[in-house]
Structure formats: structure tokens, C-alpha cells
Image (cartoon, helix red, strand yellow):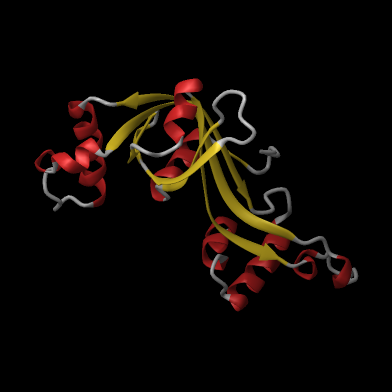
Length: 197
């Protein structure tokens, strides 16, 4: 993705965003395919260099990962459309303002390791459940569940974070847009406001 210097997130901020939004698209290019395999999935950012997840055994992603273990985990959530009239410079025709979309997106380039052994899968499930549902029973007591999945351990090799909120504009511009976002109160407006503050 294109990341201008004023939109770039440092690794710490990008990983914090991934921790807070633990659902994304796992993209495996494989080899010599017309299209990559794209899998919507929940995951756990275990530490700053490791992502854990599990998927059903029939998932088409496994063949693509075996062909090429280099994968991309893409996380993008809230967005807010910003009309051109909100961005027009004072004293200019509001109809000629340039619209944009505010959003946050992080891409993690990773090396994927498929986890097939029971103990490795249990480790992943226990970590995910410990984070999401600490009251859940031990997955070791569900052998049928365990046989129906495989795990993935992703080693993060590169973090690409983009927080696109008019970072190259002056404070007065950002305050004007923030006022409009406050008035509108649309689904992605509150998260955008937090980035403008």
C-alpha cells in the first residue's frame, strides 16, 4: 500500500492497532495461481514478532502456504468518508474541495509455519482462548475439534502501518474536519476523531 511519510505509523503504534483489532485478512499468494487465497480470520498477536491462529483443515489456504510460506496479514477496520466541501480551503469554492477517506490499516508481512501436531495446535488454541474466552474449557477435552483444524504460527518480518487522517494538513484544517465529524456522528467518525485529537 502507498504510505506517505505523514500517514506512516511506527511499528509500536501499528502493532497496538493490530492488538486492538484482532481480525483481518490472511493472504497467501502460493505459486503460479491466478489469484491469492484470502481468508478472513481472527488471530492473536502473541508478541511483537508472532501471530497465532487456527483454521479448518479443508481451508484452501493450506496448499497456498505450502507452496509459498510468505504471507500477508492485513488489518483494516473503521473508516470515514470526508466530503470535499469539508476539506476545501477557507475562501475557496467548497464544491471544488478534494474528498478523501480517513482510515487505519496495518499489513504484516510474515513467514508462515503450519502447525499440525496435536501439542502445537493445543498451544495455539489455549493462547487464543486465554485471550478471548478465559472461561472456556481446555481444548484438549475436545479431540474432534482438534482433529478438524491446523494451526499457523506467523513470524512477522515487516510491519507496514498507515494512519490516514490528513497528517500533512495544519491544525486549523484538522479542527474544521473534526467539527464536521462531531456533528455527523457516523459509524467511523468517532475513531477518526480520536486520530485528529
